[in-house]
Image (cartoon, rainbow, N blue to C red; front, top):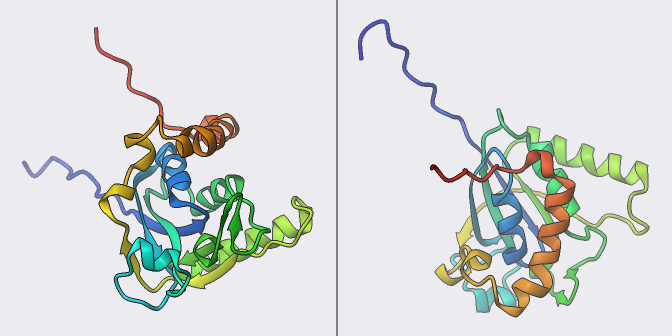
Length: 194
């Protein structure tokens, strides 16, 4: 590199950690958003170090199924991440999303900074004031402490299993609704050369 060349700026990614039901449903939603660089499924919000899916599913660890999202705040804001989050789950059902029930399916925002906490709490207040839902919002807003990676077979579940019953019946309709509502925020598919 010569003295006249400018080094490319290193992107400063931020992290969001969110839970709101089965992580299989959240992963493809957030992966579709412009500005999102990586989505990983796992467990957070509980007390047991390195929990397994079976342990989390028992309800004894206090963990929730979550997605950890790495995003570029220059392309998508934390508020926009949260707006997407609230659009794809019901934040009024304690410990339940559709047919899935248990504390591992609770609505949960684990903030990584005071700014994230302020943004989350302000957005929830706005939603309450607007009366978007008939029932009270029960989303927990708590400090992030640790994230435990989900097992390999949970990562990219929808992408690996598109014809599975759960994917067709639960994830596809949710994803289609999301894509329609957030069309302007979706990544564009590269067009094949030739």
